[in-house]
Image 1 (cartoon, helix red, strand yellow):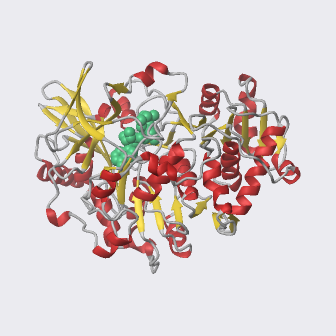
Image 2 (cartoon, rainbow, N blue to C red):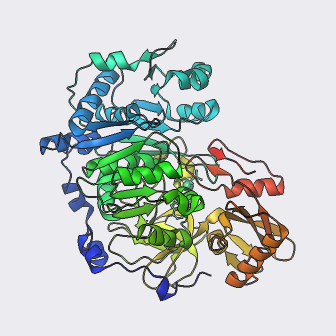
Image 3 (tube, protein in one colour):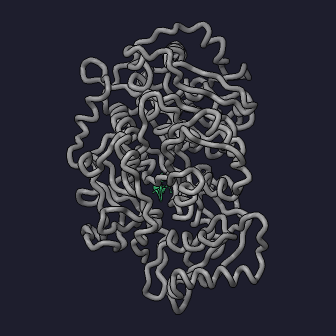
Length: 586
Ligand code: ATP
Ligand code: MG
């Protein structure tokens, strides 16, 4: 399996970088950390109450930061609109009053089906102020995925646009009896309520609901990479983790200009696209537009972004766009770059180093964990291809699971399931309406992630693959990530997905689907060259036996390659739930 990287592959941090980091000494912080201390850095409401929106916005007004820009919104047109903390406070108060006036009370579910427009962020935080549960949906979902998710969560209210309502919700409304009110942000269509006039009329004063730390706050659906998406419930207490992990894993400092490129329809876009930056009193950038290499480089430079949190798919697209897209852009203010959502190939980490003078810091977490669990830190040396070490406050292990037995594996670089000891604040409190699926996530004292990983002798964790994606070939256990990373090293390759196919003699054989960079032809010569390259790097037992070229790989809306779909298609099996499929193979 994966070797420890050669020591000259390790990206070392300078003494100056270490000293400047929020967490200058990982081990010391890990040893001394307590969640009680982390909680004491928040304001909290009198009587032991806790509300995410108060910690995100109003607490900063009390300390004299009302005039700081909380959110800079960049419209598709490129126009910028700023919202100070004081303005965001008033706007979210107005929205919370509107919910009350429309009969929505604590615990009711408020959904959003919106692009990245300011109203989405106002609705999210206003909903939390009112003590209602916020559930963001991707605006690109079709009517069926919307209906399924609104049914599961029992949506009581929806905030959307008239266009999205007419196209996607009007036709399913009759099937959603719990849905009392639909607010539209841009005028009124039949059976909806126009939000603008209500916002103008509403009071900008609101007493934030005194929620209990264990009251439900957020409902997020998983990406659907491995099967039918699950509705994950998080509580207000999660803010303790959002705040602390923002500081430790993303190195967020007050006044930072921070850009999280994720859409709030995916958990990253809420935990780290709203809550972590605001509770750390950053200025967050929100871009309405979809990915575009030129636009992204321009935003990084012109907004003087300090901390940037993005995903492997976007990084690979930037790599594909090549040096021409970077042009003369410079990023002197960019202090920290991080990535999440999928394994980040060593090539991409190193590309960060050569392009931006610093590596991408990979981190790992899930909708279920609500916040970052394992990360590469500003002050810690980076081993490209490793997802780093557990956050202070997080106990992670590699375990062998056999029936009801769970055994920790201590031998370095041995594959096992990545497991975490429950008890951190942002751990899910349940899968909505799926108790049995939730119960299956725990064994003994551990939460089972469903991912396979290894830990090296220095305590760094290495992602191997989803448990469902592990390939067993002629007695070898092969993680797709290892094979994909080797192929990614080839200059013609932009993206790879590897799956196992049934084989009579070997049990399974490895097949790779490869997308090429512009200027490379998908011909037989290149296929043979890639097979040869993989054999040299991985050895014949692990290297793919088959390579197929694709222009595109099937991906979820959160940018994850759907290997299960490639497998199902290859074997002629049912495709299963594809409600989150965004881009498909060609
Ligand atoms: P579903 O659970 O519905 O199949 P999903 O697991 O993709 O979808 P998310 O909660 O959005 O839904 O994603 C979490 C998963 O993403 C992790 O379990 C892991 O497989 C993958 N992942 C996240 N970050 C990383 C990372 N840094 N390296 C490798 N894999 C990662
Ligand atoms: Mg999952």
